[in-house]
Length: 371
Ligand code: TYM
Image (cartoon, rainbow, N blue to C red; front, side, top):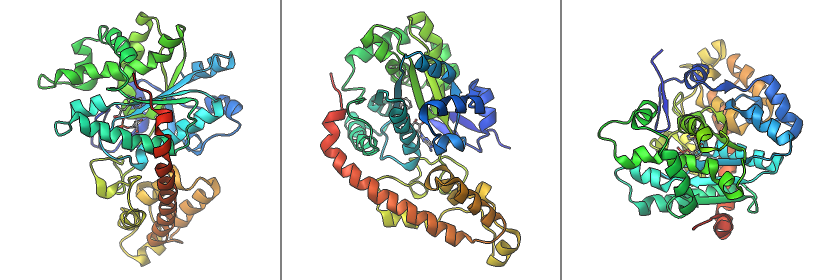
């Protein structure tokens, strides 16, 4: 198998998620930890049951602190490089579930600085515009306005800058190179940036002047930033942030993660629902060359983007997903039927999300904080 690559800026190849745990030095979420979570949430989210959120750092500690009455704060973010796709929504939907179940606050960072620095074609105005577009998707998911703050780094910088400076002073160029692969041609803003992504990990501790535990839900690509954050935290007198990582929502071409740079095989929250339907009808499946062969030997859900979509997101019912799996492998259903089933669900989801997104325009100021 070709070697896969997972960094905050590049994901390619066929990812071996178990290997990634070893490579990054994180821990798998085991049954005992799931039980501990369930004790407080009353149920397990499908993303946990299905091991899509599958890896963590210090999650046992977060639960222990919570049990002692030391409530954690959630922190997550988005690099505003374009419209939001379904892959981005996945960790946010899970974050919203955590907020509701644990009744905790959320800090949401929009890194307009990052996307400006990393993309030669973007102006600061571009990344600001996308930040506000992305914020509508976040708000549309139903976060509690009383317990959620969203900010753009360029607009909420005073307190963050002080923290980022403290972090930056602890990170050497050789560490940044080793973790992120920076070269001599890399601009110096990019090298500094990781300390901005670290800053919110310590924001609440700074504000409250005590050690506030932080839990970061994200896909595993963002882990390298927080590995550094965790290394420097003790010397700055802060607790290490904890993480809960998910796998990547795949692209409609199969295999790869859904990526903003491939619009034909990604579904955006602003897509016209009929256009999204078309993308699904053209998606890569695990079907055979002919109907006859499919009926005879069955399909391969393991490589099928349609099945993955249902498994990750659009079929929450465990019995139904199992039935679909057997119906596919036995040749009882054909790809066209699955595509239609998924397309109906995606269309419905987009129509509803887009309505909430419109309403979010009026709520924006309740969520955004600025200096
Ligand atoms: P960004 O904008 O690349 O991604 C936003 C969030 O979505 C996750 N993600 C995915 N999850 C599942 N399937 C996919 N196909 C997929 N693609 C992206 C990312 O892991 C992330 O959680 N630098 C960050 C922004 C950021 C951040 C943070 C993210 C700032 N602070 C704290 C997580 C936690 C970025 O560019 O994310």
